Length: 151
Image (cartoon, rainbow, N blue to C red; front, side, top):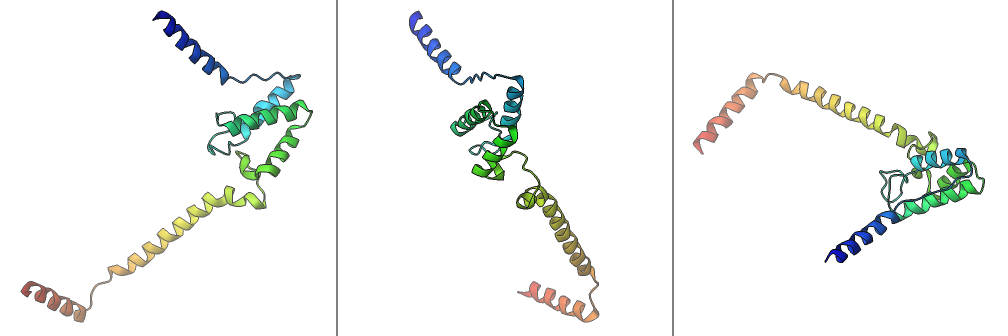
């Protein structure tokens, strides 16, 4: 019985060890660029995590690809250019402000102003609804209310 317990624990220990990624860098600048890049690139599967935070297979592949490109001597900007050309600006967790991404940056502000305009318009229309009834309208309303009681 004791041996089964040890066997099961060792299987889980091997599985837990399999998720740890070790990268060997020739220079500290490469490691710094790697850490910076994997924290700036978005996981395209999870979409709300960076590839550093994600355990998705695509994120693992992207981390490996970033590492390999840096080992080949590519600059940080080369890696960013490659990723955005291949996956679009969405791959960047904070995309650059340009014509193609202006809606990503200004969209929340535009929605805020549109919402404020709708609220302002509805309040302006609602203010006109508080008018007093004319004498003829009051008589008509009184007749309708009296007929409602008879039915």
